[in-house]
Image 1 (cartoon, one colour):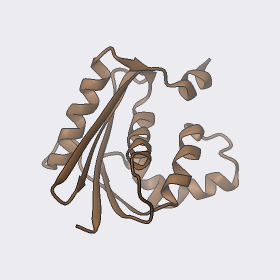
Image 2 (cartoon, rainbow, N blue to C red):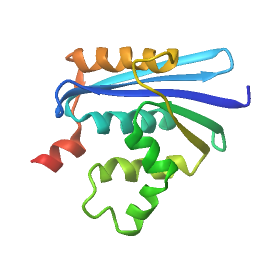
Image 3 (cartoon, helix red, strand yellow):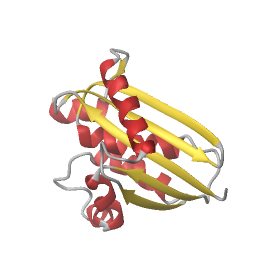
Image 4 (cartoon, one colour):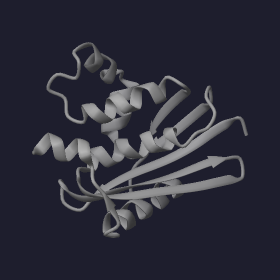
Length: 153
């Protein structure tokens, strides 16, 4: 029970369009689900937002965490350390810089391993997150993705 398992997924109806994220946090037998919709966003933003919100929801630091996601964008950016190169160049020319800047301090508080899983396949945690994300995207109960809407304005 010393490891926190997090499943995440993001969704957008149109790219850009209404979107949402879904999160399942599992600590031993305790499971918590989170989701939220946004009125105008992209799939990659929701994939990354899911990881951010999951990490923001934690009250302790120094945890061993495995994050399962079907987003190669998120996994590769972190595991291949691309994001750290982007930091050195102040995210010049990179999309979603606002979210990456929000992510990095959270990431540094824990020992996080990112694992890619095939979407819409046999991973029950990822499938549940997909349901949560699409329900949030379709809910009409949306927040404004301020970073995205400023970027495209």
